[in-house]
Image (cartoon, rainbow, N blue to C red; front, top):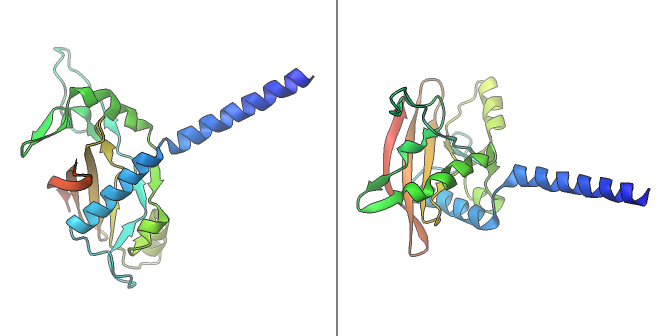
Length: 205
């Protein structure tokens, strides 16, 4: 009886640990890098989110997952380069070199795909997000339901190279209806600080 009870306790503990691992899947060092990237983009891209007035632009405190896909192949083994409905094909990252910087190479392939295990959304640490006029997706939905203005930025969870010296994020600006735009942003860690190296507009409406 004692053995059965012990086995049950071990199984429950194991399942609990597995569930916790699946829910977070982000180490403290990775979280530090993510917070630093969010702050770097807000400052370096001069996002106007520091005013906490009711009508100012807000920054979503929840980062959403960026899904990375392997493109399907045609019969002749050529990759189909049509964009996926959401996320990016891994061929968008590998190889990627611009302005003399190499961001991602073939050695990063498996690690990029492994980041599909990131949570669907990730909350930015409160000590950082409290500096800005912040919001959540649920609050935005409530504001829209009440026909209130909703201008906000939403960012993806950064994806990293194996050495954690390169990162990519998507930054969207939503201002209601058909108003909005998106940016693709590549960063490098230089002298211990994250720096935007290249960015371009990915969509506009």
